[in-house]
Length: 103
Image (tube, rainbow, N blue to C red):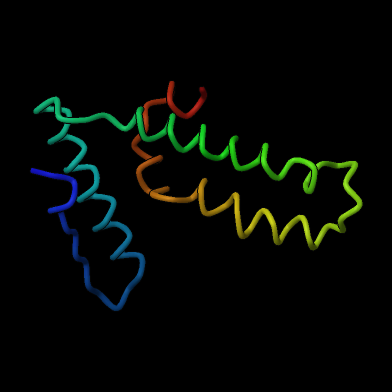
């Protein structure tokens, strides 16, 4: 199995059902990966954390508390540049080990 040949499809009129089905399939995939020692999420978490801090450092002068920019502009910068990095593949964070979440 390769990362680019896995697809999960859930169709229903109830979004809660879709979310439950998606989470169940993600958990099943995780169990399979652990069983066959294929992958852990730790490299991804470390990469996302590093990428987020790198983005924040680039924008520090703009988003610093001492910045002359107003709150709306700071929120726009956060929404456009930082939040997408943090939320990319966020469903996987639910199944992360506590050590990955706290580090």
